[in-house]
Image 1: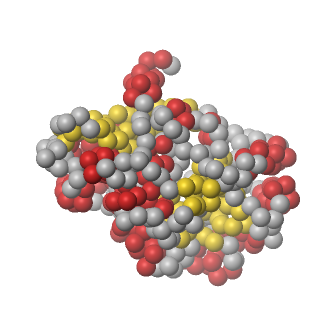
Image 2: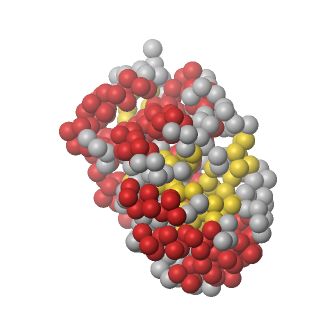
Image 3: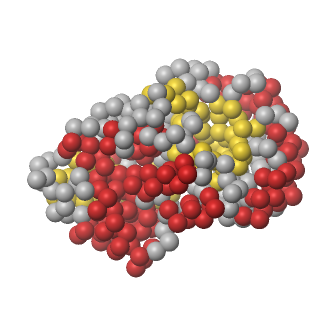
Length: 381
C-alpha cells in the first residue's frame, strides 16, 4: 500500500500583473509518497506572514498525514479538522493549512487510482463552461479600461468581472458619477451580450443606501452581479439591497468553513456563493459547501485567482456541480498560472472544457517553484 512519506509546505512570492504588479503570496504544499509519487496543493495566504504561519501549521499537521494512505482523503481531512480546533475552530490559518494538504492528497489520490479528480468527484455535470475574464480596474482613463476589456473579450470570452477599489489609478468604487459612467461606457463598448460583473473588494466601503443607489444605476446598463457590495457579513443590509434591486448578489468568498457558508446561505440574501478551495478547506471542503449551495438552489462560483494548482482544483469542482455556471480566468499572463505548469489553463473560443489526466491533471515545474520560494525572492530584492 502506498503511504505518504513527506509533507513539505513551500511559501512562494510572485509579481501579479492582474493586480498592478503587486507581490502576492501563497503557501504551496508538496506531498510525496514512499514510491515517489508527488501531489501538489495550495493555500491562498495573500500576505507573507500568513504564508509563514500556514507553513508552521502544515508542519505541525504533517504527523497526521505521514504514514497514511493518501487515497483516504476524507479520513485525513476529518483528522486534521479534529486537530485544528485548538488553533482555528472557525477557520483562519488552520483552514488554509487543511486546504493545501487536502488538495495535494486529492491530486495523489487521482494519480494512484489513475483517474482525474473530476472522476473521483463523481464525473462531469457540464460539457463545457463559459469563461470570463477576471481582473482589476487599474487606469485613470475609462476609455483605456474599456479598450482593455475589449481586448480580453476579443478571443471569445463571455464576460468580464472587474475589481473596484484596487491598486492603480482607476478610483472606482468611491464616486457615484464616475462609477456609473464606467458601467455605461463598458456596456456601450462591449455590446449587449457579454456579462459584466463588479467585485467591490476589501477597500470599497459602501453603506446600504449607497449600495442601493449604485446598483440601481448599474442595472440600467445590464449589470450581471455585484460582489461583496456590503462586505462579508451584513444580513440586514443585504436583505434591503436584494429587496430594492434585481441584480444577482455575490458574496461568501471570505468564509472558511461549511458552518460559515451555511450561515450565509441561511440569510436568503446571496445568489452567487464565492468559494475558494485554497481557503475553504480544500477539495473536500469545497464539495461539502457546494452540496449545500445546491440544496438552497443557489449558484456557486469558484474563486481561482491564484496559481494553476487552485485553478485545476476549481475547474474539477466546477464541472462536478450543477450550481457552477461559469469559470473565471485571469486575462494577463502571470507566473503562477503560465510558468508554474507545463500546460497552462486556457479557454477555447470562450469555453472551458473538462479537465483530463490523473489527479489534478497538471504537471508542476519544480524549478519554477524553487525560483519563487519566498526566501529566495527576498534574497533577490
